[in-house]
Length: 369
Ligand code: OSB
Ligand code: MG
Image (cartoon, rainbow, N blue to C red; front, side):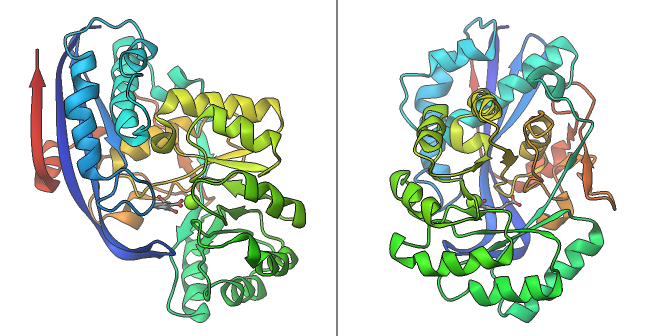
């Protein structure tokens, strides 16, 4: 297909409640929505950057710059026969995985629509429904957290993940476990600890956690292998994995026993699938992470999570848990049994609502041949 037009929209989505993690407090999300028009179809993608460089070095500004000045000029007006062609055209750009993923995901949607198949089908998905969990920010007290957990379990969520940080860790884990001894339960530190904190994690070993996500530095693989050796609980890497090469290094070093896949962190669905396949071949489970996406990014996440080795519930919650009104129809919902339907329509399988997209847009730029 020939890439005729690309549009970028810097959007600002206000969260229904602040999200507190070891990285800080988030009250809104500033993502970039990418629209690609080619051969009579429109593809939509979402770059999951944030306004701040606290999770990743990328920000809304850096991704806008990389897309506008490098990635879009590389593909605009070009005839491409696959998403892989487009990736090759932008491959000179090092890093900037979230910027790349925004464009890459829009192209996957366009190719799926051109073929009249769902994105799930095109990616190789095998499930009609996926198991989903919820990621709960740090609460003012353990009692507040237990209340939140109760509410989400009642809604049907199959797995609870809580954010932890030094000073807000063991007490919170203990409180949830005391109330709910049998639920699937995991923690995410977002790199807030050091190897010297091993005693805290040894203590967590007693609480039957499914996994401990990214305890150490965002760019570390080696120290995680030392920590993993000391623990029974599997370590899961998030921030440290940017490519299938990183995943291979982490598995060879035994730095983790589970991997969190976020397309935004690894440059898109293509690299996500390579990581998924590598892990499958080594019997390493993966699960789908989240970046508080709008319905556009969420639709892609749901499609990817329908692949067979996504055997643990993902951080893919209902639209209403994040935003009062999603920018797509229909909104994503969680059933009482803790599952979410994988859209079956062409491409991402949900419709972008133009007025709602316009309302959240703070900057827009069009690129035409
Ligand atoms: O570490 O998984 C993370 C949100 C922003 C940045 C990093 C993370 C998260 C989440 C949210 O945990 C998961 C979701 O989208 O529900
Ligand atoms: Mg994480």
